[in-house]
Length: 369
Ligand SMILES: [Zn+2]
Image (tube, rainbow, N blue to C red; front, side, top):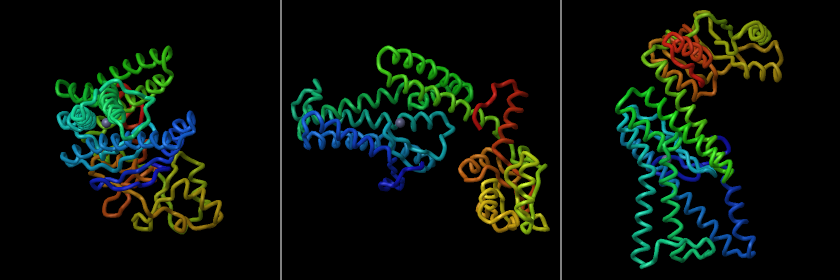
């Protein structure tokens, strides 16, 4: 994620902090400082937020380390002001594994709540009431707040709506009884119903709930489209979705020639090949525009083409190739057999393929590709 920097590595997973997180810290510090112009109050506020985010990191590590047991790596964990995000390489396809991964996060909060509860009991302190005016770090009240924060985090994350963990729990449970796409559809619909209730209650009570509702609504439809995409591409080789009608360039052709091709058709990225149809690079639209601006239109294509691109094999599964394309900086990928150019795959043509598949099978049109 942009505007994030690495704080440290935990269990081999990079932990990143988004810059907006510091705005939150400054804001919290100021909120605690202002009423009494007291530095200890500000430090208390910061200590509480930092404790809160350590709890959130532990929650995300719960997901990440459970996923690792099923051979799924986590790219990174990023802390945002709204919480943490663990980017797993993929979700497990077996519903029982997805259930375990989804439950592991809230389970960490339940475990932490139990620990804080036991510490309070050991100190013979009550667990209620929480006094929000008491700002002493070395007090039972601090522990009491951490106990209830964990209870709230567990409850909130278990709401049965994507992108909350509860949405995945619900989908995994449904997937044990029905097929995965149907299960996702039902879970997403329940999630959107939850979002409507949240939004409605929020209108009359707390505007913050309306934001959460929006977030949940978008999460539900994104999840549903993603699964439709995966299902539409399942078991289909690259050779069936690739474009075979496209223009290529020679490395010694001028950029003016490429600009003409760009304006004349729909194609945005041009494979650069030598006489034997061996691929040398990819002239992307942005490289072309940049090259024209910097070096002029007589510059040979070979001087500005992208040589660092992803490629696909014709017999490889389209889903794997498409995920690779999404994670690259290019919008299209050449399909190669032994370095020889056979076709091109672009996000648009995969989208078109899915639309045709959906129309043939009478399913709803996938919204996201
Ligand atoms: Zn979670």
